[in-house]
Image (cartoon, rainbow, N blue to C red; front, side, top):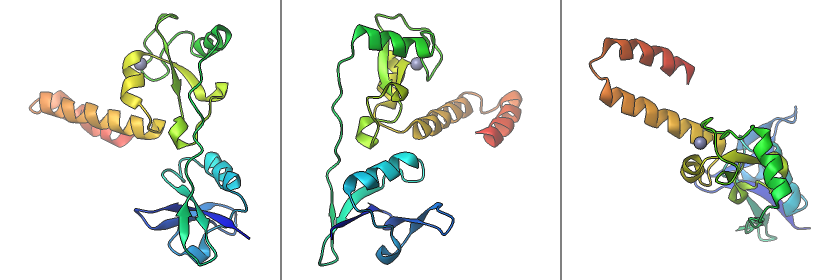
Length: 178
Ligand SMILES: [Zn+2]
């Protein structure tokens, strides 16, 4: 029977489950969880997208080798006016990333979990975004986006306020919070 595993090639790690059904990263194929279908593996990844970020579905061949299963990425769809209204209303017309107000006619639909990373075109995954945020976030996970933005902010502020005592205090506080 063909089985599937979730594998991250550059880290040489597999997805397994502990006795208490917690998602764990394991180093050996024999400890990897075996899924019966590729879709089962994809669904498991969706449930724990943070812990399984950048893990891909691999088919376990009879000879013990792994073959990467191409991502079944759903296509970007065009949205009806009703769908656009529903998505816009979720944040009352504000960009869900920076909080700016965006006109209904110019707002962009953002996939919170990108399609390329297993996200869907479901309403729950769609948010109102301004052009700039949509452009910067592109196809990365929200948590990675936040991490990068924080890094840029801290780095730029440090350059600008290197000698300012107030920044030194704020920096200390912020570093602990981010
Ligand atoms: Zn924005």
